[in-house]
Amino acid sequence: MPVTVVVGAQWGDEGKAKVIDLLSKEHGYVVRYQGGHNAGHTVVVGDERYALQLIPSGILYDHVVPVIGNGVVVDMVTLFNEIDTLERRGISCSRLVVSSHAHLIFPWHQAWDALAEAGRGDAKIGTTLKGIGPAYADKARRVGIRAGEVLDAGSFAQALKERAVAENTTLVAAGGAALDVDAIVTQFAALAARLAPYVGDTVSVLHDALASGQHLLLEGAQATFLDLDHGTYPYVTSSNPTAGGACAGTGLGPRDIGRIVGITKAYTTRVGAGPFPTELLDDLGDKLVDIGREFGTVTGRRRRPGWIDCVMLRQAVRLNSLTELALTKLDVFDTFEHVRVCTGYRVGGAMLRNYPDRMELLADVEPVYADLPGWNQSLGAVREAAQLPAEAQAFLRLVETEVGVPIRIVGVGAERDDYLLWS
Image 1 (cartoon, helix red, strand yellow):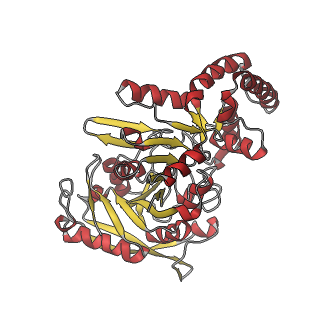
Image 2 (cartoon, rainbow, N blue to C red):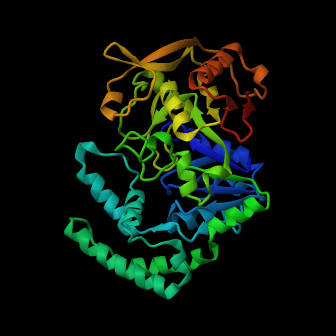
Image 3 (cartoon, one colour):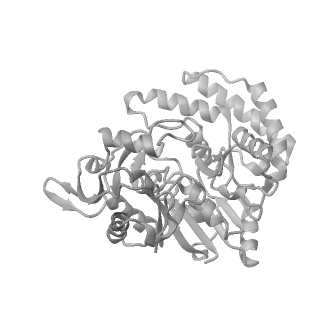
């Protein structure tokens, strides 16, 4: 299976970076295919903690070529902050390749993001205000500036100034603060000069790698239920994190993909507004947040906690053609007296096995739970499936049965090697 896709199966923050880091050992290329610097992927190696927003997690392996695909929107300030930080810590970024077709983010995108969110009042979406949505909007309006344009410094500077002047006029007219056009041109012309050596034809790079027998790992940001088309709209991201987005975001074809790994936590979290059937608003929810350290890598916001939801996971299997699951943070339940698994929804006395297609219906469902005993012991040292307590094994088997695909990897701690192979 030369191409593997890793996708979040919930609302994000499932621990994709840990699984990607694990799978990177057997892949020569690791590719980000969508999203921007609104996603935080964290890898813990010994005493070192690496929080990445744009650069693919595979950068931590010397044999991996990290690629930022055409479906990503790139904030050059963040990119070079990451590169500089990694280089200072001894991690070379010279292998990085950025697609010439990736769109760039500029200060006016962030200004529009903040202006739009402020105007929503109590109906805020919960955007990270990073300019991601406006950058994708410019891409769709066919007025965006792509990474390949930095290869012609003069043309790039002219296009940059024209766009900055135009955006400044419309921003001020809409009630926003004026941009410093000259400062933007100076700053981003310098960043463009730094970006130029990394820019390449990533479609050819990836297809040539396949032809030479290399294995590729495609890394999504955010998750299935934040997908622009299939998520809980409008509380979604501005791109397609689902497996289908991996083809559009890299230039690889559907028949190139052989393995699709869905990442789920042993429970569920989401950030920002939107319906959440299994949400816990009590002390158990606080316990999940405290033990699981459920605060955003990028924003620092507290995540909303809840029990694992197999209805949404079944939908994730459908939408992504998942071949398997990787379940993270099983150890968070080590001190719980009991754990719950949502197996269905009830609406007005009627049972639902399928995920509702309308957000207002999802907001009205009552989750149906299976209650299981906890294991009341630490899983931190467990590295073999047979070493898991019977109660933990029962939890995993129930999730597999309800979801319909096998769990292959189980995370039992925050460290790089805190995992076991399950089935």
